[in-house]
Image 1 (cartoon, each protein chain N blue to C red):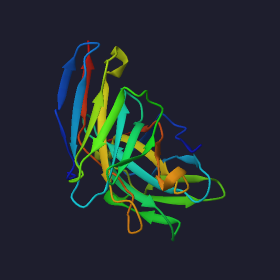
Image 2: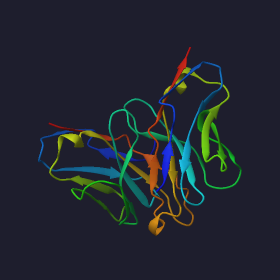
Image 3: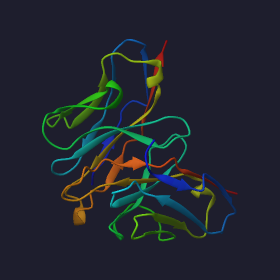
Length: 115
Length: 117
């Protein structure tokens, strides 16, 4: 098992509501990435934070936002939930930079269902 | 823009036979390449990576992969498959020349490996 944890494990929300998902990175990692994984698909990159700054974003609307905290834990916030937001949300941490190793360690995911 | 292709949705192999899961990529410059495995209802697990150096890299659980720059490929291999290797396999690339040095990751769609007893 990796040292990356996510909460909650499962979540059911209603269309239009807002949700916050949380991730605790592996110790010593400075980068966190968030992904959306639909059933039978590969992870789709949402955004990435390096040392508390967003340094990359995928093709997701602004209602998907995030934060990375000084202890390198992070949040993914989704506003105005839509039915298509139903998916497994994965966070992954890595050590990037000059002495980085760059492989990502994933949490178990949060299964979000929007009804 | 960088991209990763896994041309096979599913690979079937008999236990004890060698296996290959294919991956090709498109990225400017020298790529950072990775393989991950996902078991049902689990997150992805890192298997191996190529950053620089020897083109043949070895990883967890007896897996290895060969970086081929001329063919832009990074195929995953194992000499002798086990039933427990049955899972979903993802190839990924991180581009060290992405804007701002962000090493944005891109994943393939995944290949389902089924090892028959």
